[in-house]
Image (cartoon, rainbow, N blue to C red; front, side, top):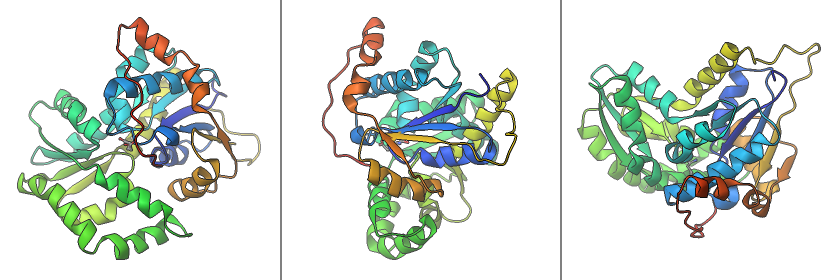
Length: 314
Ligand code: DGL
């Protein structure tokens, strides 16, 4: 078991912010990462549809096999974490609870803000998770779906490292358009007197500096990636499933896959991961659809809406 990889998935590239923290915390572990870029964004979709995706991709990872799964997508966690935990035999870790825990730990005045996709915010998952840890915490939530578009546009801009892109994005976005957008989105949160803001979407850590500028230095920003990586490490350690240190200095060989464009995934993914991604497997949607996601949902008596054909991202 300890030699099996850790499976991580997201609607696209954003989950690589989580994968990056997992590889930093656990440098001996191998990762299998699937980015469902062909069906990204998940944020505006019906949560029952996202649950089907969670079961399909979880089944794909289960068949590799993997020793633990991470749902590195807030929307997919909000929609399908509990279902995935009931369905799969290996531990499944989402990103909402770790983020909520880190926020509850960080807040002093117990006023916590959360921003995320429409799916995540409407699900109320962060409020529930934070209040389950500390019922005295007040959670103020705002959906900021256009921030996903900003990151997508930024990732597609010219060559260069993520740092260069972030610097460049300050020129491109932090003039009226990004500032106006962010001020509109974040105005009510600022007025609520929050001292902590959860970046409840895997894309948002890439906008951290810009968001910090808008909310002010007094607000502590929380990205769940680090806390999620800690939970992965603790879970594997508790089960005695941590990978043994390698006999030589060869770094672990990670495996990357996407339902979308492989060249695009490798190019933009390397920026998010901050490591080169040389090879990417293409997983056709038909392959995922042939896995028992829908069947498993139907067995649970859920209606599964068909896809609505949103614009691709990631
Ligand atoms: N990965 C998604 C999340 O963390 C953001 C992008 C999407 O809408 O699919 O919620």
